[in-house]
Amino acid sequence: MDLEQQAAILNGEKRHLTDYGQITVAEVDSAACKQDNPVPLVKPAITRGLALGLITLLLLIGLRYTYRASRRP
Image (cartoon, rainbow, N blue to C red; front, side, top):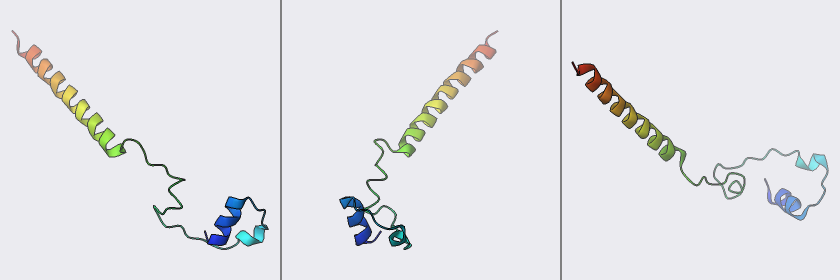
């Protein structure tokens, strides 16, 4: 958004619909977009990695007990 549009929004001024006819481009991760996209408390990649690690560990433990149970005479 240009500075006039941002100032009008912040001041709560009513503008004509034709005033907003310009095409605006917002830069990704710009200061203007930070309020729209809050930073997550925990990164999704870390959470997924921990979940997959736990699932893998439990699967390996289950396979170990299954193997031991099938080997008993």
